[in-house]
Length: 446
Image (cartoon, helix red, strand yellow):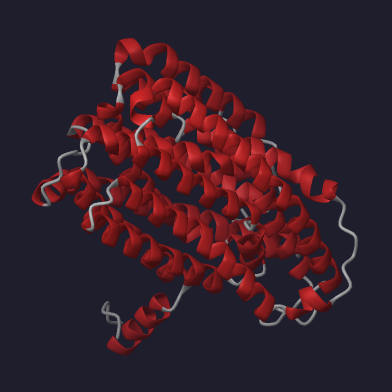
């Protein structure tokens, strides 16, 4: 037998991959790379590092308002998958439309309230920014930028249930199309605004477009694709059916935020905006690599949920564990490439702010890798409504924040880098990955 793959088979395999949801997710995340190769370098040509650092801090604090939904997004998506489970694999004819209509109505009411909560979180973030960086936040450009970001996240959170429903109803491609639309609009506004000399305001308006347009488009697609949700008599859907699993998922999300994004405002408060600019740039590159790698698992979460709900645990396990392995291998390869190539590429683009030095940058990828690994295991567990690891995530996050706050003034950037793995080693790595293996090991019978 020839070891070479026949050309027609190879072409067919390539076509299948290029038409898959994974390839589309890679395309989306590949387009996000344009932010580092086009938008951000252009901003670095005209903006000093202090303003770049302030931009990353503002963006991070505003996006923290997403924590207000406290896991309901994932709970809605999983519930939609479970209500769709009676339907055949290639149809939605057998779905529980009355239940889905009730889920839609309850979600709409809940997220209207969460939009108001997001406004309060943004107000608290503005107060913190003004208290820690008063001179920077008194500039009109900073005020306008923060206002645009705050408006974007409030609208986004008010409508965030619609992308969750699309994802849970196995319309991954439609959900991806809304993300493409938001990303392209973000790039167009940011690029044109920067060329016109609007600086950080251009970045803020581009980001606001990306926050507002995709959920609006998802609502339109949901209404056209699933009219039965609108026309069916909704079955009353008690809030506790969403809240009971969601609050644990929300604690997991909060813990993950403390392990990752909380490091950016901590860095700005302890090490200054210039160091924060370099650290945030490095961190965003690591996040991008993680987002590319996790695509292998993310696009199959609805299928894992549906298979597990239907009792086909071996199939769910094979899919989950196989995709986790593919994601880890992809992350490792991307990490090596990023550490070796990011700085030379940005230097060639004449960027004034570069990633951290190679030793610190490589360490960042290793330390973020601990969170990435546990995040993969957590996502697979949450897909099957297993949320017992929420305590471990919360304890890990609190430990990481305390470690960074206490040691960063003396140890500098190294305290920020090692805060997350210290928290993970103490409270999470010994629990969540083994729990994932126990959940799915039936996929590989002895």
